[in-house]
Image (cartoon, rainbow, N blue to C red; front, side):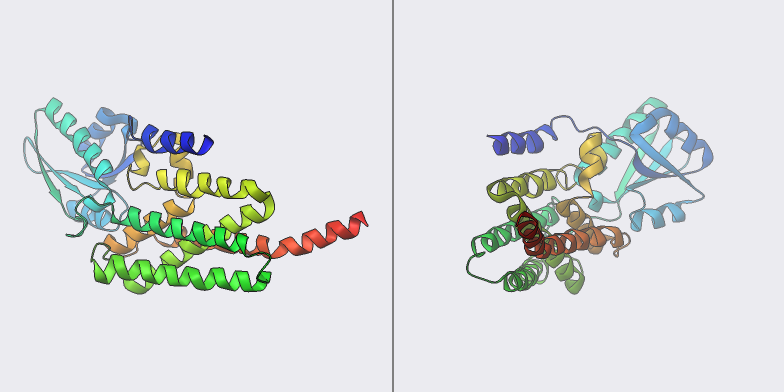
Length: 303
């Protein structure tokens, strides 16, 4: 009951009324920047830039999700990075359109960083991340069942090797085979391997320390909250405060950001999410490996 309530609350609740919060927009010209900031308030985070070339550079490097400039009297030019997410760019178009309507101006819109031809809705990265997270979760769950069959060292090697296989298979299907995720192959394999390892070792960690409650806890954290707040279905800038804060800290959210940046923005901001994935996998693996020592110390102390 807890899991179904959490699943519906996260997936349905977060889509009920998404509202933009400080969506980053590059705006050319001090006058226009001031007007946009005053008119749209906290819904956007205005980045004043000197010219349209600088704005385009910020857009293509994922520093902003849109670039707005004046295109003559009564005309505005709005460039968006569609790959930033349909919900986010739709919100920007709605906000700028409302401003332009009130100011009596016409807006021309161009998508300069569109999604791949085989990912028209921009959900391929989310489904890949969801599938790999699910596979890693099942892998970690299976490792728990093998506790009386395999030595811990062998289980850790199994989790690592299987995570690599999961990452390679997922990257091959989504990338070269289907062409839906246009990220460089090797970095994509690395990202998905880290995601699978993070999910597997985290599931193993919770099961090892929490017993029967570990698997439901991992389900809630990884498959429910993690995927719902990943920023793929609903852009992170449109999430409420708490989900927005944890979005990039959980493995699915970190993976979605990495996949998007590798696919459309030349990996401009992949360092932080990759480190996040690596930390989840490494810390969970270390804590799992320490469990026998902790158990031995407790037994010795009791004796």
